[in-house]
Length: 183
Image 1 (cartoon, rainbow, N blue to C red):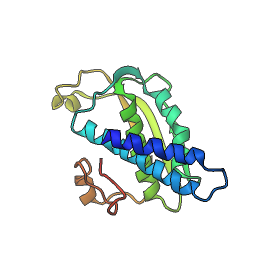
Image 2 (spheres, one colour; image 1 turned 135 degrees about the vertical axis):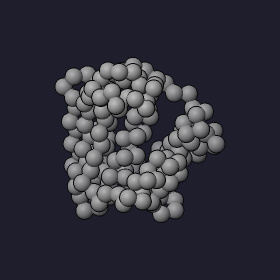
Image 3 (cartoon, helix red, strand yellow; image 1 turned 180 degrees about the vertical axis):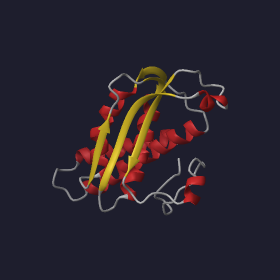
Image 4 (spheres, one colour; image 1 turned 90 degrees about the vertical axis):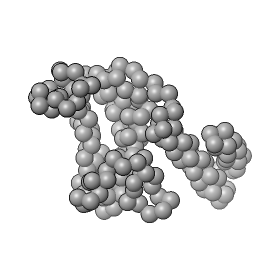
């Protein structure tokens, strides 16, 4: 499937590049390219979900990653939504896959945008927290010590209790057919 999507994207890019700047067909070619990009992204998500994708785990500070994606998120959510980023003053070192962090933030930003059609605020923040022993009791893989906190919130309509119970269910979405994957 990735090979097919790569070919579609390649031909769509060549078509787009061959059209004059004022050609009305440019929008259609761009739509093909955007759909191909969404298909490639979905493939990566499915591979990650099925654990077939090789994660590129690195120990790094998540603050610069969030800073970098912040400007892209502003364009993604539109001018009617304010994006506020509040990063911890200290480094937030974690073992992560940068691509997955970016994908999580993009997915949450899109959901926030959909929940705030008349505008609002999307807030992303980082911090360091030391959790009490009771928190660690039923999490044997977590070692005692400080943990990185990444918070994403918005001023949208919120979720019903029913939706909250299904939040981490694979492929669950509240969006209409063809508008969301639930990943």
